[in-house]
Image 1 (cartoon, rainbow, N blue to C red):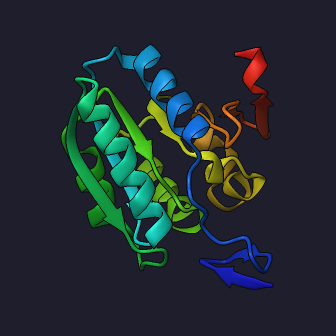
Image 2 (image 1 turned 90 degrees about the vertical axis):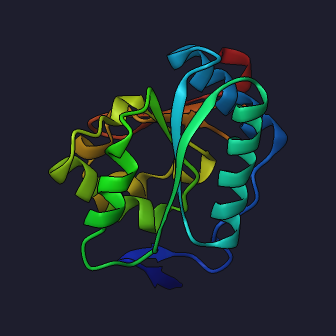
Amino acid sequence: MSTLNGLALPDGSGPRAYTEAELCCLVRLVTAACGPSGNVVVGSGRTPAGRDRAAAITAVWSATGGQVTDVVSWPEEAASWLRHARRFTASTPDVWIVAGPLPGWAGMCRRLYDSTDWNPARTFGFADLADVRLGVAAGWKRVAGMRGALADGGTWTASFSGLITRGPSSR
């Protein structure tokens, strides 16, 4: 087992590629929250999988008429993430989309919640963030309200005490 930013990661559980069902579900969730022409900021860690997911959602959102006001990346480990958090929230988008991966996002959540006007209820993520380790590492109060897509096209929501998942047929 390896660790990254204090999170235990079982071998082979590193960042993974997104699925088409996941990407389609994420676009539906974001569209429902801010409309098809909403302004979004996309953020990710600097892993290849995180960058691929960020590029994919940026391309799809732009192609469907939405506005991407910024794409922000951050390291998986940082002293404070303050510079990245300020840039992530600077344009005051309708929603934020997080392409992961989990360890860096947990650090960003702490910094965003404690130092900016970021709102987890206006934040959407890919399936790799649907992990109880996010709430444990960032604190459930800092992620409560975040929502996202699962690899099979289902959804997840972070609450004050854990994750709620719904299969693709229960949308």
